[in-house]
Length: 242
Image (cartoon, one colour):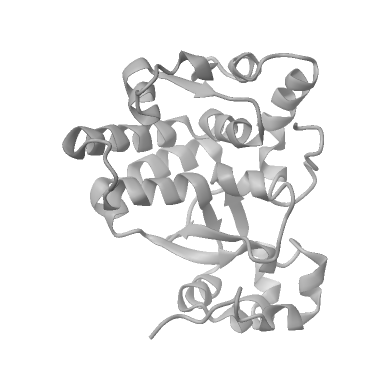
């Protein structure tokens, strides 16, 4: 399962310190919840069958204070995010539980739960010089990735969406992250967790404060983007709508 992860890849490298020991424990035969629990006592993981039938996953986490995990990369990466950003994950779960209490778990999730799902599955954080932010928010891809290319040496990207991390085990050009629309203190995990947990309010999330970033366009994330025709693909690098 985790043996194929290349921790030198730029999207996995920030997760190596927390992820490699868990992967090693899994390779040695530990169950997923046991391997994750051994990495940190701050979050308790349980087997998937601990989740009662007809009980919402998010509600169970809120009520029990435990996180069910299944074998596979999806829950592996979700567990790593819990280990590194526990305050943020608990805050998002709290907001999920509040939304469920208010509106139930019917067909429509509502704007807050929708936004949480988008970010939790596909989110990323960016610490970058102001000109890169301006180009990103304008979706001016040529300026962002070509004209301002040298500035990426001073930028830091952290993929926090566990579904996107899972997909990046087999990267494709069209993979696009939803980046939190504001500079994040990516370099300090404790500070980052506190900052992001504070940013996550129902009012803010309801606005879907994200901006798209095709991650393989980031310099150094794909050898193919060294040829600037890589960015001519309008199906991936889409202009901002009027």
